Structures are given as C-alpha cells and as structure tokens.
Length: 502
Image 1 (cartoon, rainbow, N blue to C red):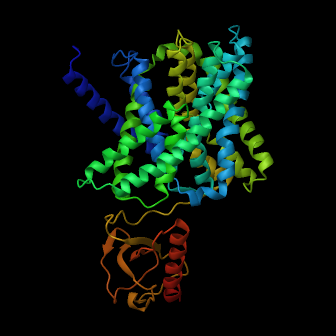
Image 2: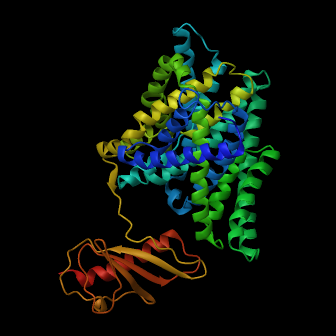
Image 3: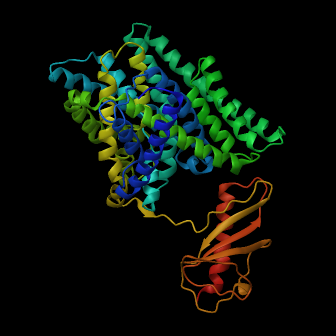
C-alpha cells in the first residue's frame, strides 16, 4: 500500500475501531483492556497485517503526552478526603516500594542472566527493573467495575494513590540509571541531589501551578464553553513541560496539579471532566496501539525463558516483599489479607513499555532486548494478574458488592444543586408506604424513582417498594466536601428508612 495521508487515516480508523471492539470484549473475559489493545497493535504489525513501524522517538513523544493527560486525569478523580486515611501507605508504596521492587527485581535479573550464560551487568539489570517498577490500577478498577466488585479497607483509594504517584518515581529511577549506565551518573551524593531536586521541584511546581490553573479557569471569561477544554489541555502540557524545564519531574507535577484542581470548586467542572475522560481514553488507545506496533512477536521467543522467570519473581516474590517491608514500620491498619491483595494487583501497564523506549533511544538497547523483556513481562503480568483481580479479591475476602448506579444524570454547572441516590434495600418495605409520608430534609425533593428497568416521575401518592432507587435533588452546600455529601446521604437514607419499615 502506498503511504498517503488518506491511507494513514483509513488504516488508523480501522485499528481504532477494532481496538474499541476488542476492549468491549475484554470485559466478558475479565481481562484488562490494555492487553487487548496491545494485542491489536501486534496483530497489525510486521508479523501480522504487515504494517512496519519502528519509530521509537514518535512513540516516546506520544507516550509523554498520553501519560501527562492520564496522570492529570487520575489526579482530578482522586478525592483527597478519601485518600487521607491511607496517605502514608500510598506515598511510601509509591516511593520506597518502587525502589525496593527495582532493587529486588534487578538482583533477580542479574543472577538469572548469569545462570543462563548471558550475564547482564548489575547496573543495567537495575535499569531494566526500574523500567518495570510502576503499577497500573486503571486496568484493575475497569475489571472490578465490569464485575460490580467493590473493595474493603480503603483499598481502592490506596491503589489509586499508589499507581497515580509511582509512575513519576519509576521515571526518575529510569533516567538516573540510564545516566549511570552511560557513565554520567556522578557520585552517590550527586544522584541523591538529582532525586531530591526532581521530587521537590515536581511536587512544589505541581501544587503551585495547580492552584494557578484553577484560578485561571475560574476567573477567565472565554464565552465559548468548548474552549475551556482546550484551555485545560494547554495548562496540563504547560505544567509538565515547565516543570521539566526547571529540572523537576513533570509527571509528578501534573498528577499533583490534577489533585489540587480536582479537590476544589472549578468552573465547568463536569464539562471538563467529561472531555478529559474521552481524551484520556483516546490517548491510552493510541499509545497502546503504537507500543504494540513496535513489537515483532517473533523476537519475543528469545526472551521467553528469562521473561517467565523474572515475571513470576515479580508477581510472587519481589512485589510482595517490597509491599510487606514498606508497610511494616508504618503500623498500618490494613489486614494481612488486604496486604496480600495490594501485592497481587501490582499489574504492569503501559508506563513500563513506554519507559523501555528511553534506554533504546539512549543507545543502551541496540538489539531491542530490554524492550522485548519488558513487553513480555507486561503481557505475562496482564494475563496472570489481570484475569484474576476479581477472583483474588473474593478469595482473600476483601471484596464487597459494588452498588449499581441507578441514574446517569449530571446537572449543568450553573445549577447549584446536588444529586443523591438512595437505595431502598434494608428493613423491607410495606406496600402502600406513600412518598408524601416521608419527611425529607429541608429543600430536598425526590426527583425520580427507578424500579427495575422502569423510571417513574413521582408524586405524593407514589408508593415506595424494596429495591427502588431514589434520585434526590437538594440545595448544594457551599464548599461541599465528600464527607458532608456522605453525611447528607445517611440523613436522607435514615429519613426514608424510618417511614418504610414495617
């Protein structure tokens, strides 16, 4: 096929369409969407349909843009009030836990490669391990949502915090170890100074730029609401690039900026969140496909043996060891079963494959060995761990029923009101309990009732039944926090429950 703009768009649209279908099918098999996106990319590559693609620089550039958006979006979705109880565990897992995982895994790679007769220098083995040291929780929660499985003991916010903040740590280790392997690392003190500079400037820059970005969004009057989404993207990319220019970690900066912006009042927040969610998915799909296209499956056979050994070691030894050592001095309230689950769901994701392009472009991976090892272990992790996140949660007893959302309704930003869902599920309900007999809090109305697959617009004579889902609208509390929302939900529930019980 002659390469033209039209042909590129044609093939690209077909690949995107096939990827979306594959992602939809993934929920039926209980496997991460990432796995299917990578497989689609491989299927269209050199050993499949025949598309030849080996532009590592282009993939790295697209990956940097994608990861910036993904991390910012993850920060926007992170409620600080939810992560506060597990803040110390999440931060330590994302920093010291990453370092220990890289150290233990690097030692395994060093000894296994020597045993196989193709010894890898220890610093290079540490680099390979650092590339793979971050985790991906997005795949975990996508599977749990599809199976309607929730998690106990604040595991969800803990895993979200860890995975959102450990990519920057893995990136720092990767860059520093590349410099060491190229003879540019300097002394131990210089390496430590570089680390502190990256983390310190990244955190401070992310906080300040996040505050500034929120101020810009809230105070600027563009007129055209659609342009606020473009403004947000520009602020995300500015935060990442400006922080990098200062010598800080841009990935850490955009994640913290996302948390700062997501946990305060923001004009057009619902519109921006919807836009960001769609762009995040698009960037993830494009990045995964490009990473899949880079791989020549026939080359993976050369790394199968070391990939299986190291992959199994990461799942059953190095990740659990790092988690338990990291949490031991904290006297965490997490049960042993919860710690086992945190160890098990340390899935590898797109970030390790993306970070594997850095040694390649630095000239440390001329024959693609590092890239292929990382890719194989990522696939292995997604298959073994990714297909068992739900069953492992049930086995360890850390799962709970995840309530199905009864309504998918968002109010416009200019409407200063709050929506709350209440399930009539406890205590039973007697036929004939009238809605007008329910004493709701002041300025609160039942907006709609879902009964099975039917939606009912209620009035005072509407009866309530067990299994009903009520959508309530109430005057929004100024500077409302998740705890206040939760307390209001309890008040609403108690108000209803006392009038429908027998």
